[in-house]
Length: 291
Image 1: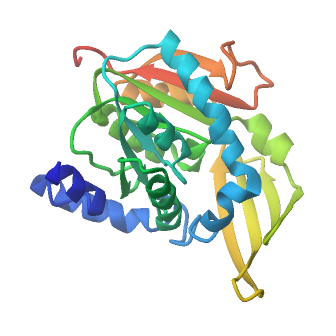
Image 2 (image 1 turned 180 degrees about the vertical axis):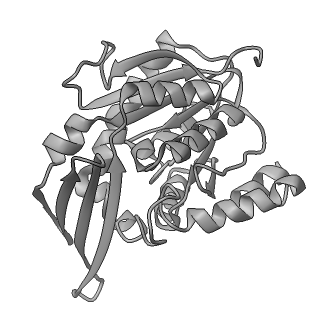
Image 3 (image 1 turned 60 degrees about the horizontal axis):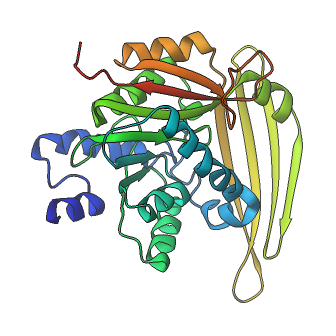
């Protein structure tokens, strides 16, 4: 337990041989929620408005879907890592169900919100600020989740491969990985080159998206206004970039990391994705015996 607490605080002191790796991970992790984007403020300001802006609805919808997936693709044991955990909604749900939960995110702001929510709910789970390409855990786990298109923030195949390799290393033999990704349909047609508005009590958000066909990159510029206690508003700006991967690229990266693909689903359904699918849930398993 002492080692677990030290991990939650620094994720370094319990593993002397991992110290250099973690130091690099923290340096990279400060660049964004997932460790890739260009500034340490990515999601840190938006975190204050994240749940209230409606984003929590995705996680609440995801929880029963994960239960369905685990019925189809069972795991042995009840230990898990929620990678790119955000404000901790999914991690908290599994902690409430009695799972041993580790939660990793590179955004200090998102983790602040997650810790606050867990404390208010009286839950015992461990949060750590780390890069999804360079993270360490106290021990391997039976399940790793990486949700809400977090993997699309890996803007090169090399970085996607690094993230999958870390997932593979974190899993017990026979362990399961569940991760969803936006498709090109979402980035090019749904987000496209549009402007979206969110106006809620105490905050307003303007989201401007732009898609580049050649690079398959979608960049969203968020301008937010958060109401301060004294009644004035504070502005923040964030730039988020995602990339659309082809299915064969994802499969190849999972295979290279030593993970066998068990299924790919139209996200929130149990049917196969097609050319018009907006989001795909990948299900992959670490072999029982390393090959």
